[in-house]
View (spheres, rainbow, N blue to C red):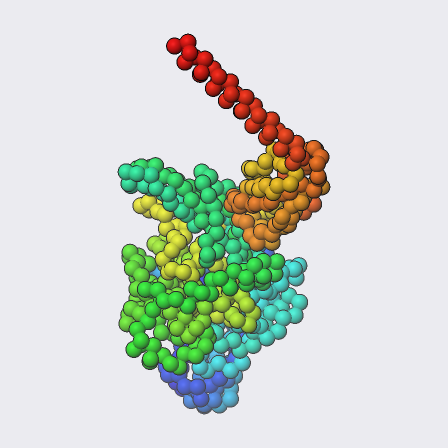
Length: 613
């Protein structure tokens, strides 16, 4: 008999985990292997523990070949407890070998069945706590899959705790069956199974911006606060010191402006909460669709990082769709982990095609955007934070410590921006085209330019830790508040003349407000416009509103009242003295007569003074 090697590879979190059935040569026609893998979850406080059970059935197709040994190796830091193994006839005693980085377990079967069409079954059980993680408001699952040309039936089943009310919201690939608390994948072909239970995720943000003016004269500078998207909502907690101005740029970035004196240094700290949703926020979807109409005029422009030589483009005529461009980027480039420890220089799309093994997240993103824009697909870059515990599976490489970048394209059918991540699909095997996740927090949007504005984390001094992100399950309390911080309303108006009034409003709440409507009313005066619509106003932002008034009264003197109302609540009230035209005219005449008498008196006085001289 000849012993054969059946090789099964798993990829899990930060490790490469290999399960190996030891044989001499491998031919698909020699045997078939059927796999049933079950994960049974139990919840213990803020941790999820899983009992893994592997049932493997091997059928020999030849009389002279049988499976004799089974081996499993995993990193030393990968804890496996309560390990048990069985074959059809006995419990097996594992042989454990360790080196500096790995632990290997070898099993030799007690008395394998031999002969053509003979069957050998074996079972492996162990407890593992790293496959399933409680991540703030959600459960996140990353499961290895078997890579084997010889596999036949292959079923992976996750059994949630009986008391769990969690529902699966993201699954890559899609499960074959979801029944109650059991999720089953029948013959998954991806390298990894990824699943999320829960519809939204919350992150506490603490971002530090180190500002410095090295010049001998005053300057202003701007920082980028994490913006909102159709999938991301931002709650402000504090921004200290307060900026002189906060506003939205054309790409939708939140920019805060600060004045710096000569040689001045200033540290700005933003604290807030990012809420990420699986589904688009329907209440803001119309707004983002409307601003896209203005943005599209530059979203096909070339940029030094988003341009590819025409000769190279002529070789890529087979790329017809966004799907083609995405998977070309995934397969063409190789992630270079060595660059994580170096000062990263951005290559751009054209240069990375000549150096495909030198790519990090920026190059994957740049290549996608360059090719997408060339095909007429509106696209842009998102720079931000990728919530990842594993730099091998999901690396962060925009800057030396924390940041990540990924592209978005505008989908004409759904009229919405779609995020994709060719970098993380390349490194993890997880599908980041057909669905996304809740681990990408946008810090800056780059549509006009590939390098501006700078995201949080890029305002560094030496090795400062400027980005702190923690998953949380504590929902913030929404505060929706608009204040009139100043008003220029005339105290007196004449009944037949138009006058202008200006109001400066500020969002003093903790979240962006969309489609706000303010009503300016007065019983005694006509107001134009009487209704003012504000498409969006972000926290701390100020907007100046203007209205024109004219009295409804004729030839009457009265005190009029102007009110500014939001959602039937008065946020501003101003009293105006209305003066009839004739009364105003009589005052003017009296004033002119007074001036005339004064002039006559002065003239007479001067003449008399000359005679005395």
